[in-house]
Image (cartoon, rainbow, N blue to C red):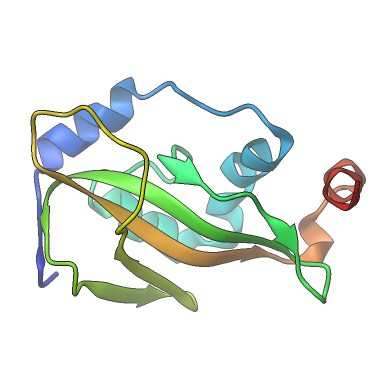
Length: 135
């Protein structure tokens, strides 16, 4: 991939040791469904040693007009360097370098990949999740 340089070993280590998971209903839904609904995205992330079920940051989702669950963004931490002009497309998803994210205390160079508009079809949603979003 042009415009990015990844330290595969350090990135793998970050995800192996990462255990700071949000346990809210929305995040739990994302963790348990991302591989099923976006296998090509997950393959891409795994190829760069990023664990797709361990996002660094997830936006609060909403229901769109069709009743689909939309996460405006999902962010993943990568050790290395990247040009902010990087853009990649997989499964109708745009992957860019994030410009805004929570502060990270790392001594290594890093960047954050941001996947825009991760959508889960309304058929995949459970009643509890829908009721929580509507309330």
